[in-house]
Amino acid sequence: MGETETELMLKGYGLTTAEMIYRMPDYRNVLNTFVWQDYDLAPDHPRLFGFIEFWQDAIEGPLHSVRFTHRRMISPGEWQNVTGTFTYH
Image (cartoon, rainbow, N blue to C red):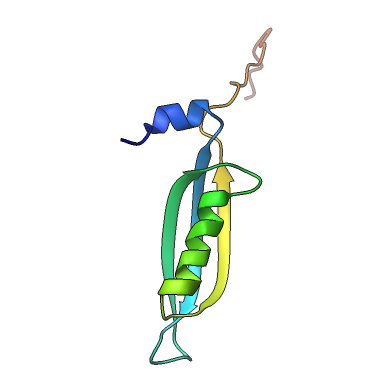
């Protein structure tokens, strides 16, 4: 059984979201989108690039472009010391 999302985040994984724009197999002038999400390690992104390789090998619709973002979900919290308040009328 695989690791839980919390275990992955504690090991440094973050949520990677990729938008893949690809050409329809029968209509090459028509573009379509596919959104993929998984927990992955930055900066190498082995799961994302593994999925892209799978796409190129097994799926007929050729990729036009891939846009992705990565966000670590567990990170040090931001703390700010507030010593007073300011009221504006």
